[in-house]
Image (cartoon, rainbow, N blue to C red):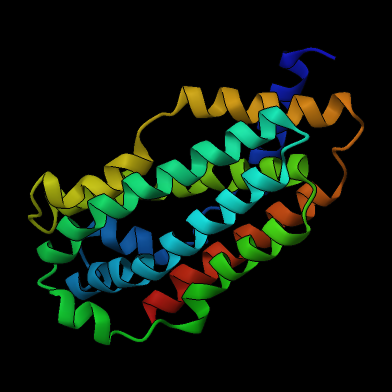
Length: 218
């Protein structure tokens, strides 16, 4: 099999698992500037819990994928990316008027934390190639949401560039990361390890992603 075939698998999965139009009304209201500014602060506070969890999950996946070098490289890179995102979170919290005391006092919502809980489950139970497919498909939707929010924060809510850095990071095209995902899926294809479970994992991740946004909207 060729790398192009693995790329087709990923593109097909991303298209199949993409959220339907209108599935995320909160991001649409942020784009229009009609959502409360407090929603952005709540999102940042939830991410303060999500990012360390995802970082550990991806790190564990990298360790567990020792026999699958391409998958191990992908998950290791994702774990490093979570470190970058966490460093950018401080400016976003400050821009929302949230200091360390407010962040420590915040109680995360179950509906927002279901996504990282499932990523942790995948880290323990998923075949690396299947998890790679599911995570990459979900990142396609997440990156689009982040691009929309970053634009709205500047145009509608008056945030400075540094305060938008968290969303800018995820919104940027990541061809190197896509190459790693293609290689990880190819590795799974070549070894006969990529299964239908990857689509199931991706469908559940997208469901939990939308649950995150729906919970923030309430």
